[in-house]
Length: 212
Image 1 (cartoon, rainbow, N blue to C red):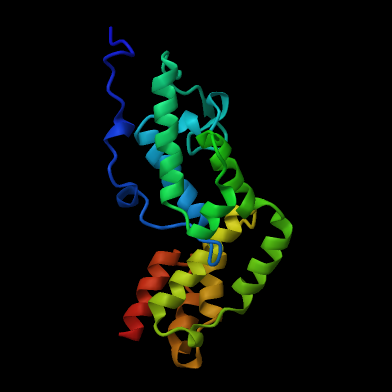
Image 2 (spheres, rainbow, N blue to C red):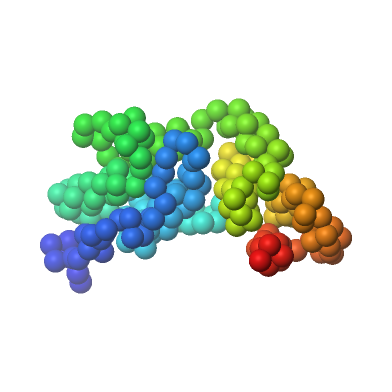
């Protein structure tokens, strides 16, 4: 049986956290949903998810299920070291503004993780109203190219869904069509009348092809 004394922890081998979480979290143009999902996937892969989410409610990616995580190491110094590593991962993937807001002496990774979540998910109703306005008024003509337009739409929807916006793929495609300029009216009409409505990625490919 492997004991805690000679156990090798995968998290210790991570030398560059930005390789695994390439999208930094910033106050403006928040990508919290994307950042948090990448971070949780990384923590599951390196067996430290229980450091940011309590073992009795580990997020498995399925909102309807929970599972018990691997028990913490029996040696307090091992647990403390792993926890410090996870805290470093958080600090290393957020902007300076967020870092200065959340950083406190001697806090655990869970005590670091929760304030980040609060920053972006508190006042959900107000955030949802603001994001819905952005979503409904976005226009393709304000972007340098179609790819940038589609990406910003997807970013807004990701943020909306992280605060309970519940924007379905079909609604995303219809808003993408609605925001097109007159020069793309033909492709927009064709997409609008296609049944079933194309997926976002299919519609995006067709519009970008039209642009080229």
